[in-house]
Amino acid sequence: MQLLTFIGLVILGGLLGFIIRPKEQLVYSFAVAYVILALLVSADIWLFYFSGIKNAGVLSTLSFIMSWGGRLGHLLLGYLVGSIAIDRLRKIINAALWGISILTGNTFLVATAGKSQHLDEMITFFTTSGYATWFLFFIMTAETFGALGILLHFKLKTGPLAAAGLAIIMLGAVYTHWHNHDPFSDSYAAVGQLINLSLMLVLYYFEQQASRRHPASSIYVI
Image (tube, rainbow, N blue to C red; front, top):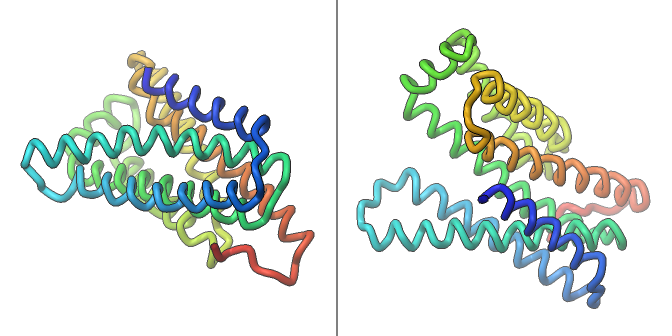
């Protein structure tokens, strides 16, 4: 259900982006709001999993922000991608990439940090899945560098390669769960990340097109 909600919100947002055509400044305001939301949700995720907070009320609030902030983020991302597919406006491409980079990069860093805190369970999962223990550490290292490659794209232009590499890892995760006959729900996170990474690669393509049209100007500032 969670994955279907994610997909449905992205599709709905994309349709709205195609149908509703407000002024450029309003779309840009939505894009900036998406960046702010990405920062808020990313900070919330780190606090929820690694702050050590025990208060049930605080944890409930953090969980609420994570859940509904994520849903709003999916809707906004779909809307921005739909709008960008029509107008290819540079500053909106830039803001959308900032937002999805912050969210996706931090999500992978959180996931890798979580693996490091549960190494025994992860080693057991990898070995029972037919993989060597060293492969777990390879995946953790690759995910870390992939996340950093996404976050540092605006300085090093490493985003497309990093996103493609992480997408391959997510395909491998889906295959592993299928090979193990795990319930499909175990693959929800990987499929969700595949969708995010695919949308990110589309945005990188639009970014490259905008750079070719305006090679002398930067599109890396909001």
